[in-house]
Image (cartoon, rainbow, N blue to C red; front, top):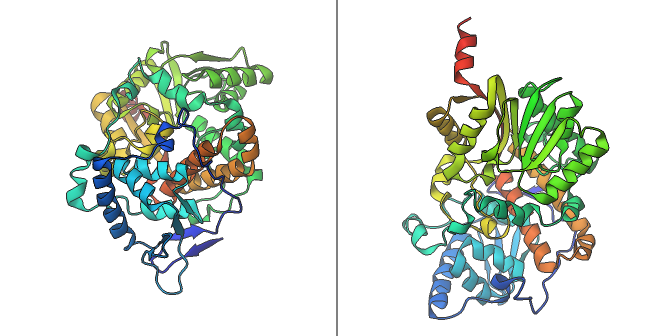
Length: 449
């Protein structure tokens, strides 16, 4: 069920769960950026500027921002229902926002400086207007004032393993609390399309994840005897389904946790003779493969290395081979505006990541490789539903998450990540694509027959 205001912003009803509140004293050893509020003359000056920009922006938005003194900002038409953001500690909120921009927005949520009746709906309002929230003259100063990606997080051969480990090696048990039994950590493909993709149920989730995988395998022509390279193992579901078709699979990952569980699942399914899972950077892969598949791994490559990624695929692809990847994408103008920036997602979730645009993928393959994009399927609305199901499952099992050693600050961080991502897809700021590529020379040869 949804509610829509007069400006056309859609938002789900308030979620039926209670968000954990952080303790009064946050452990600075674990959360240094959360336990300590920025201070000093520079921080205070930045806070005043950020507070002014934020208030000017929200006065134009279909949202209610409530302050402890009773002040309410927003542009909600009379009688409409819009998401509510409640600021508990305005001073801390402004200081964090001034210090880190959107990083500060996420950190202030983790710290409990603000809450929302529906976090996704609040973030969707901001995501839908991401390019216009800050005045254009100030946008030009973005690179001067906002943090830039640390060199230690660029996806060089030296750094990539640690970047991947910081996310995927958190705990297999943690991911199992909110993923379905296939342990798929990417968008499902539900048996519907367009606006019909809503209110999907958990009972059909695993089948929708398998449908996503099966479509990729079909597009890569994977069948008996096919030599498959998988870049980014996940927890093994794609390798299992390829092996069930009679293929042999060589899968590479940089997560030791994922490798261990994926190998276990492969062995238990009886496919150990067909599937090899190695702890290896994609750039180090050798051999020749009839099909290359990769699910939501290009986002972790880094834009400086997109050419290397596709050149590696071209190098190992057998004549006549097919490539099928699934990729989160962003509009090209937003990619150009943000690709060198350092965001909350980089700092807390995916260090070193950059989401590509379709145009960037097409340009890099056209100009730097002998590969060419042949087919695309966009299904961003399916990702919004996937993230909703993860969010609901995660919050329903938050007590289990706590028993695993993940405190309330972590839980708020993870909830912000899931809702932040969902808002991106629901607003259209983000999309997800299945992209099929092959070799130009083979396509030319086939076309001349």
